[in-house]
Structure formats: C-alpha cells, structure tokens
Amino acid sequence: MTTPRFLQIHTLHSYPAALLNRDDSGLAKRMPFGDAVRTRISSQCLKRHWRTAQDDFAIHSIKGSTKAIRSRNIVDRMVMQPLNDKNGTSDDVLDAVEKAFNVGVYGSSGESKSGRQPLLLGLPEVEHLQQRAAEICAAHPNDAKAAGEAADALFKTRRGEGNNFRALLDSARLPAGLEGALFGRMITSDPGANIEAAIHVAHAFTVHREESESDYFSVVDDLQGDEEDAGAAHIGDMELTAGLFYGYVVVDVPGLVSNLEGCKAEEWDGENTDRELAAKVVEHLTHLIATVSPGAKLGSTAPYGRARFMLIEAGSSQPYSLADAFRRPVPAQIEDALDALGKEMGNQDACYGMKGSRRVMSVEDCEIPNAERLCLDDLAVWAADAIRNAKV
Image (cartoon, rainbow, N blue to C red):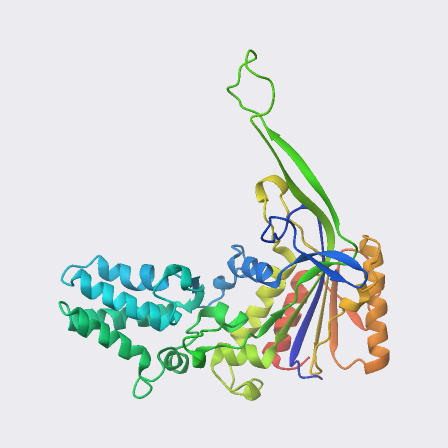
C-alpha cells in the first residue's frame, strides 16, 4: 500500500483545424521546446474551461461546493449595487464606502477600474462584504466622512476582527469558493488571505512541430443584387492549427484536503479527517480534463475532442513530467506519441524505481509500464478512492 500524496495526470488530446488559445495578436499561442516550435494551450485557458464547464461533472454540481467570482467589479456590482437600490442612504455616503471598499479589496490602485486586477472572491466573502457595507451605511446614512473612515478602518484593523479576509478563511468553509481551494489565489491587498493552489496545471503543447495555416474567408451579402458590383461584402483571414497535445496536471492531495476542510496539510490522512469532498472533486476533475475542450472560434471550428489517452499515477514521491518524451518532436500520430511516453516512463522507472500505482485509459492499444487499463468512469473512481481511503 502507498499513501497517495500526489496524483499525476498525463493526457494526449488531438484537435484538427482549430484556434484553441490565442495570443495578444490573435494568433495561436506557441512555445519553443527542444529544436522545434510547438503550439501551446496556456494553463489559465485550461483551468477556466474546467471550472466553468456545465455538464454532469461540473465542479459546482458537487454537494458541498461553494461558488466564487473572478472580477474587478465585485465591490461595485456585488457589494454596493444592492445598497444603491435601497432608500435612506445618501449618494455621498455610498460613494465614500464604495471607494474605501475598492481600495481595501483591490489595493491602492483600486479607485479606478483600469487599475484593478480581476480578483477571485468566494460567495461567503462577498456576502461578508455586503453585510459590513450595509452596517456602515446604516450607522452613517448622511455622514460621508464618517462612513468613509469606518470603511477604511475595516480593512486597516489588525486587532479584533483582524485582517478582513484572513478572518473569513479561519471561520468559513470554502470562503474563497471551490475554485480558490483548487487553483489558489493571490490578494495583494491582503497577503494573509492568499491560498496555495492544490491543482498544478502545466501548459499543454504539441508533441510535434507546429502545424498551422492561414484560413482565408469571405462573407456574402444576402441582399446584394446581380446588377451590383460583384465580390464579397467582407474578406478576412485567421490562423488555424492542428495538433496532438501533451497535458500534465498534478494534484497535491494534502494541500487539496487542507484547502477544502481547513485541516493542517500533514493531517490530511487522519482517521477523523473528512476526505469525501476532495475525492469527489478529483473524480469530477478527471472527467473534465478528459472531455472538456478549450477553444476560441467555437462557431467556425467546433474544437471538441476527448482525450485519446489518460494516465494517472498515485504515489508519495515528488511529481515528474513526461514532457521530455517529446523534447525531440515525434511524428504527429498517436501511436508514435504513445511509444515515446511508454519509453520515457520505462526509463524513469529504471533510474528511480516504480514507487506508486498507475492506471491508464487509452483509445488505442498501448504499452505503459506497470499500468492497468481502465475506462474513464473506472479511472475517475479509482483516483477518487485513492484520496477517500488515503491509500492505493
């Protein structure tokens, strides 16, 4: 038996004629690796699609989950708007409280919308801010100066209530929502409320050299008559890419259980620690990683694809990526990629030993050392049971 401190998830996804993740110029994101340029999908893109997916395995369909909101307008639209709709508080008071809350939540540049960075707050935190803002407005309905000073003091206090978000982390379950517990967050105005990510996501990249082309397209005007000038009403182009992508995700199991349950990370496998929510999260996440596709240009490329291959390794040793299997580009065929992965894993085992437990799902036949083959449903349940039982 092995204690699964880490779950490592390796995948291969295939996408034809798509524009999965764009850079600031509208082109596909790229990266050099080995002696070739590859097409890339950023970890931010992958995580967003997983956390916002709406299907049977959506993370917020899990019993006990709490939602979070990422925005630079939380104070304006979620905290102050309900108060703006109520009578009895002067506009000057509302403006003073809103200004102080924006600075308190978003930092010194929070007064202007352009100066704020999108921040992830859980609904318990938003509701807490709503309550405190309402209390301040009720206490000073016509005194903007007093209301502003009270709002400033809320975020500057270090005794009593203490650091505003830190106090919530210590008192509420999932104060930053399920997203915060999984993927972490950083609050520059309140470092004590930062959360370490328990799910580590690498940028996916093609196992072969980039494959791209410029797609020329035209638009026809349906109301243009035969007697009018011939030609298209609009002409444009966009980049399309195709690729077989290697993806890599690590679940820090002690960190995940700690973030979800509020226990110390070193106590995650204790007899009295509830690991059910963490187990369900991993079960759902396994399905989401395998089946949810990122992609821009959905209407014109339909970039939907399931994983052709997924390998999960549970163990106590430090994680290791299999990206070096593709440092030398392989042919853009799933069989060649599987051969490279199997060889890399075999070489790793020969050097470091096989100390964990592996399960694999694959559309094609493959030879992965020490790995039992399962379907996706069984693979997800196996990963969940590894956390639920704290052993594998």
